[in-house]
Length: 611
Image (cartoon, rainbow, N blue to C red; front, side, top):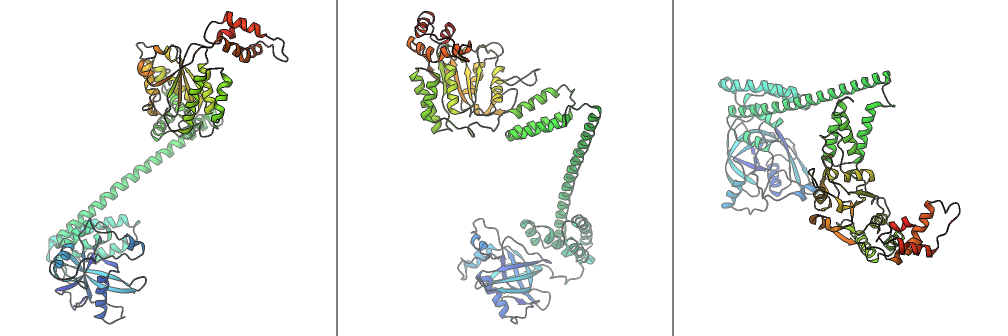
């Protein structure tokens, strides 16, 4: 059998050569170009060329059946063929065996029941890298696929024509008034759609003229072929054989497109309105600025408006998280609409300045040069004499920090009597880590708001001591010393020790929320240290979060060495006895008398006071 049938009139033959088409649908009254590379598709075109005059280039009476294939989720990928420019537009199953019986049924099950009889308008051939054909097809009419009569070398099936080919039949509007009414309504809505799309789509004008001249039973196919890309919508229209039903479905698609255009137009108008409102606000602000300059009420070159712009730049330079930046931007937008005399102006501006001044992304570790571990002990010895066990533990702590910077280090709490150098040890750790040091005194703190901050609803509200300390440091990874941790109290205003549980818990402090800020701040990069005189007064849950390191008092020999090395030079310098030249020398015997007779405490403050 030949690859196509010659049609002398507008009636289809009983059999047609079939081209399976995947993921695309050819509708009557539309055109489509197909690239054929599979062996069965090439064999079909070879049969067409062998049955016609070779090389003539005109095949006006040749028909093939284009049938969409059913979607198969298990279909294999054609990625390699697509990458090499060899992807076939048809859906031939080359792996299936080609012999009669059940294979015809399997092949038939892959194909939909309705297809389009297409006239071959043009054939072009290409022999490199593989032999292939490109067909230009024009859809003419629908047909029903009854059964397959052959699957090798290409598919051939028995068909029955479902509607007229091209415009052969008379005008159906004269015979069917209902179809004429639906067609008139469809044309009106389609013209409206085409007019609204005329500026966007170049083929809209051509489609408009086609809608005016096309017969009623072809209007739906013309519209869907031009405007609808959905496979399911095209398949539904292809399967609908009643012209009136096709018109109704096409009319619903036109209404859907018009509805989408209405929504798009409405959104565009809203955006344009907002832009116009923004422009009006800008002009009004410029006029207000000119009036202020004329009245001499501006305190600088830019006035209040420039001040808010600088605040906005500071806010963006701080690089807070997106949710924080979004909330701060909203507050800044509210601030721009307030007058300076508004009750909430001062509190809102203070909050924005607090957010803009916090170190959300700046780290000291990124720029600082840490002291080498071999020099860490020398730094400790420079500030302290003795305390070998304490120094060994600190060196171990620093070594682990150097090996695993991202690890969660233990929180060291130095315990011991006053004056033994607990705060100085913490300062030495900050010096080795090359990070800013900030001491936060907790002695006598009884209000939870000192830790978590005051809520913005209160007058003169402010952030807690932790956020204030980070604001002074200017980096998100400083060394914070929680001094006198054992002297916190509790009353009706809350328990600050309970608030410290969140601060010192590495599982929670990455999202610490200060009541004043109202947004989470990451404390996981902060190196927390603590001091206490009596660890027994620290609550148990808080004590479990820290490693206690006992700092013992000094012996008489250690006090004598500390006095001669550190205290005596400092005392002489404070009293002006070393500059411009030394005027007094304290002998070792006098220092020994002061140590043994006047300094019985464990620390060194009484020694300095006695000298």
